[in-house]
Image 1: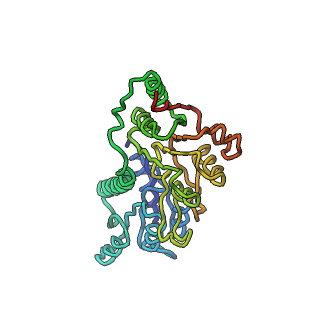
Image 2: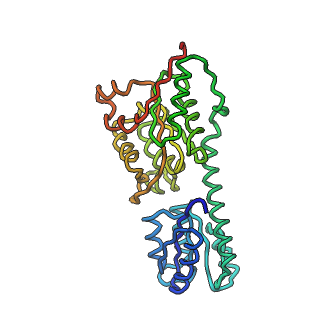
Length: 318
């Protein structure tokens, strides 16, 4: 397995839990387990999971209630239902409420492992589809960069050198000089090329919305928040986040962005759960950010985090 996946198993049969944990860990999965529905609900609120295995018949809060909570609050988590009772009505109800599949106990090990594999693949495809929708409007063909001037060749040579590192990159230059093109060039030469490249033009997003765009929000966080929304940092997890026109972000939001870049930690708006995302940050600005710092409009410590490597794009006249 190339990448560990996190599974939560919720079942009140202790022997089954212990046996399943050994089995799943042997297959390379990270596994947590709890023995009732209340603990299951608490667990998904405090940890990140890719998949939950839910026993249907449990005291206090049953598996269907846990399923409803998970699919309402964390719709990207896949769920597989486990039950010792063969009941078509229950199976249909679970599928209608968002379960990926329904397995009878005692389950066949090969069937369980294959179903888990298919559920995780389904989740991966859904997340990739979300990323693809964000990228549909992006210009194709960034690999063919044309520029013969000495200044531009120096830019490309530097971009080649920094691509293999994991450092933040700040691209500075006038509007229209191709900062995003160079950012994409670095990404395609980087070790994260098989992960998402997510771009956000900070100048095009109102100050009041940029936090929700980047970090997402929980259902009910504000009037129009009818469902949970994943932020761009979550969609970019493992890949690269490109923040264009970084000099335009509000001083109010700058400390939150700084904390995320420093720690990888963030919270969705309206949420209490501390989440993590591993992204390489590229940023770009047509402003002189050192001058913005001097004028008190941009945090010096944020600039320090962003410009680990700075690449200056030459004007078009060069």
